[in-house]
Image (cartoon, rainbow over all chains, first blue to last red; front, side, top):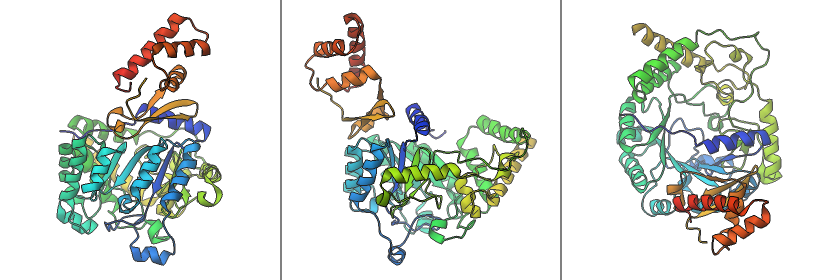
Length: 372
Length: 86
C-alpha cells in the first residue's frame, strides 16, 4: 500500500507564474503566534510565555492581522497559510480565519492537531479550510511525550480521523529527528490508514530565530543519519520499482559534469520566497521565508505595498554559493538560500552539513545500485 | 438566477477567479477560473430572472450573433449546473 500523493493544482502554478512576472504576492504565510502547547526541541519559532515576556515583543492583534491581510489581498494575495507556533492557541483564531476567508482568500492551516476537538472541530467542519497540514511527531504516546512533552498521539490521530471522515483535505508534515526516528514505519502505516499525503524531512534547519546566531547548530540528526533516514523513508513511500529508478537516477545524475566555466557568483533564490510569497512573523516582521533571518520589512509601519516591494528588491539580490552552481551533486542536493544562511551565517557560504548529508545519500544510492 | 454555492469573485492579474468559502470548500477542489464572457455572465446572475435576460445583456455588450451567444451562455450555465453552483 502506498500513501496518497499530493500534486499542486495547475491554477496555483499558473497564478504563481503570472505573479512572478508581475511582482504579485500570490501567497502569504502568517505566523500568528510563537506560543504552542507542545515544546519540541527543534522548533524554530516556539517561545515559552517567560521567553515571550523577556523578549519585550508582543503578538499582533486580530485587527492588525486582518489589516495586513486586506492590504495583501488588494495587492493580489489569494492563498494564505495560518501557522505558528500553534495557531489554535489564539483565542481569537476564528476571528482572523473567518475574516480572511470572507475577503476571498483560500486558507490552509498548519497545526499540531492536538486541539481539534469539541467546539473547535465543529467550527472547522462547518467552515473548513482548503487544507489542514498537520505535523505528526511520532507513532506513539511515548514518542509524543519525549518529543513534544504531551502524550497526545492517540488524540491527534483521532482528530485527523474526524477531519477525514468529514471530507476535510488533510496533509501530514513529518520532521524526522533523533526523538522520533524509530517510529517512521509506524507513521507511514498511519498515513496509509488515514489515506493522507505525508511530506517528510530528515533535514532540520538550525533554529537561529530562537537561538540567536548559532548557525549550523540544532537538536537534530547528524548529516549521515539524516541521509540514512531519508533513504529509509523513500524505501517506505516508493514501490520497489520507483525506489530502484530513484536510486539509479541519483547515481546517474552525479556522474554528469556541469557545462561551462566556473562562475564567480552563485544563483539567486530558486523558490517563490520573496518573488510571489512572503512570511509574516508573529511580531509583525515581513521576511521572504520563515527560515531566513532577513531581509526584513515592517508592513505595520510602512504599509504592505512598501514592505513587499522592499522584500522583492532585496530577495532578488541574494546569491547562493558560486561553488554550488558547478557542483556535480547539485541535482541531488537540497541546498537553498535559507539552508545556506542558517547553516553558515551567509547566503553565499556553502552549507557543509547539507554537503555531508548529500554525500551520504549518494553513497547509499551507489551501494544500492552496486548490489543490484 | 440563484447561486447555490458560497463563492467570492476576485480579479487577480487579469484573471477572474471564484474562491470557495464555507462548506463549498468541501466539494470545489480549489479555485474556479472564469474567462471574460464567464465573468460577465457571472456578474449578471443575481439580477437575471432567466436565460433571456443574460442573452440581451450579452448582445448589448458583445458583437456576436444571437446563435453564438445562445451557445456560449447555455454551455456556461450548464457547467455551473453540473457543478451544483446554479
